[in-house]
Structure formats: structure tokens, C-alpha cells
Image (cartoon, rainbow, N blue to C red):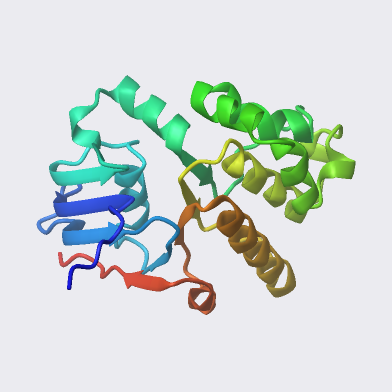
Length: 228
């Protein structure tokens, strides 16, 4: 009996990437799929290529060999400018250091991602009360006029998450987003991340050294350190 499965959101095949001066590839991934709505936890020791893999999947860096496809689009077929536009349209990114603009307000930081993407701006406009609902869900509605430099670390992190979710991107990428948080704030952030991603139907790919976070994900992937 035939079982129809949705096309992968992310699909890697025969991916190899080697940093200069290394004898062995930093990454050697024969095949990897991430399904729509799936949460994937990526972990491994320092130097194993976690950040490199994120940069390839988000199109920040072109693959040296193999294929990286997101939403059916082969990123290797795009120019650098086209990859930047594709990332702005379809991928929300939560950085380890948040990368917020300190003297802009909470609201201006949250809506910044939509300013760089006509698609996400249109999605936000056509989704009733998307921005206000997002701010409320993340506990930011009372803070939206405040400059982000006046917020606590935990509040700034929620602003970074709201910015990543703005405009319904299909993929949320999070690079060590809980490294500056204590256990209670870490768990609260993970609950918000999962709740918001599920509400928007987004897939999540998260990198962390904290293996205790794996329980929040459908699947985990471990990368080994490359041999010298």
C-alpha cells in the first residue's frame, strides 16, 4: 500500500566540506532530511562542524560538494544575493549573542526581519494580529516601546525569538540560544520556542552543547570531530 509522505523541508545529499589545512572533511554527510514541522537537535564537540552545517543549510556559505536543498530549492543554484533573499524569506535565525540593535525598540527589532523580506512582510499583514499575538505569547507586549539595551538577558532572548518567528518562516535555526541562561530561564525559553514553532507549523534546527535539551526534540543528530 502506498504511503504519501510530505517532501522534506531540508534535504542534504553527498555533502562534504573541508576547512583549509584539514586532511579530513569537517563535514561528510551522505544524506539528511528534515521534515516540515520537525524539531531536530544537533550536538557534538567543538570543531565538529555544527556551525558550518548551519551556515550551509541557511545559505550563508555555499557547499563545496554535494547538494543542499531547502523547500525544494537547490541553494547551490543560487547566487550569493539570491541565497540572502531566500534566507530572509524562509528562515528565522536565533543567534547565540542575539544580534539585536540595542537602541531600537523591542517592536522595531521584532519587525526588522520582515523589513528585509517582502514575503514575510506580506504574511504578517495577511495573518490577523500576527505581530501583537506574537508579542503577547512571548510576554513582550508591555515592553514593545522600550529600547532593547534596557532589557534583561532573558527578555532580549525573547525579542530575538520573536524576530525569528516574524512573518511565519518555514524553518527556525537556533545556534546555542540558551548558553547564557540559567536552568529555569533555559526551560522557559525552550517551552516558548516549541509552543511558537508548533503554532506556526515551523521546523526547528537547534545547535547546543547542552544534551539535556534533546528531550524537547523529535530527533537528535550527533556530529563527530573530524580526524586529523
